[in-house]
Length: 132
Image (tube, rainbow, N blue to C red; front, side):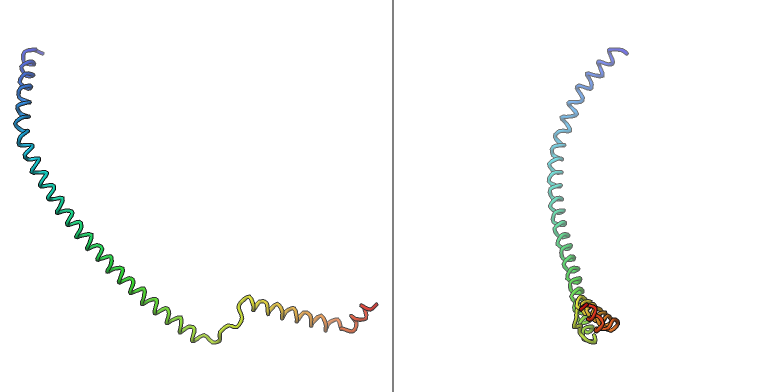
């Protein structure tokens, strides 16, 4: 490569680059300021829209929850009525719990076994054997 055109190109670039940078610096700072104000205005508008949307969302949630709450209350009342009807139509209330019923059944079986034992062996013969 030749040094002449290379040096000439470097000198030209070093002179043109700062001049180009100075010319664009002034409009760039003005345009940056206008862009900043425009962006700030857009930010305010966006925040207002966000607040409005959040309020709408809260209202929609509240309406949906109130509808669901009223539906659950109606279902609760319906179930209470069904329970009352079922209790009214049941034949007799239970006098004994399951545990008490098993106790009575066990006592009956023990009594039946005792009676069978007494009748099968004979009471008088047993007494004689004990006396011997």
